[in-house]
Image (cartoon, rainbow, N blue to C red):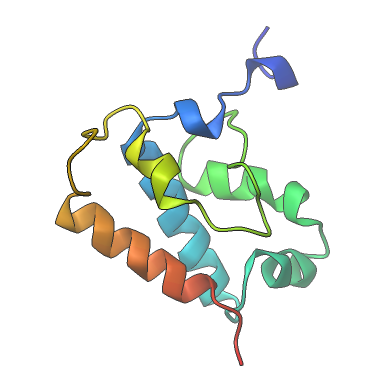
Length: 112
């Protein structure tokens, strides 16, 4: 049944391209609204981090997906990314994905 929690795709089952689009959208939204991390963004929206997850998915044009394990307190582990469908197991992350991942990591660091 579409739209029910049981129909949501697990983060670890999504294609790597969808995951990177979500990560970039998260970074862009956070950066555009003042920086910080996911908790900062959620607070600015008057919501919890779990309540803003659907915003990230909608902005990335990905419907009904769950956040990654450890969300929002931990960033996506590189090991998870390397095991996603579409990733090339045993090979280094392609330069474009590595650069996107590193930019995402930089943007999510809390402001000092």
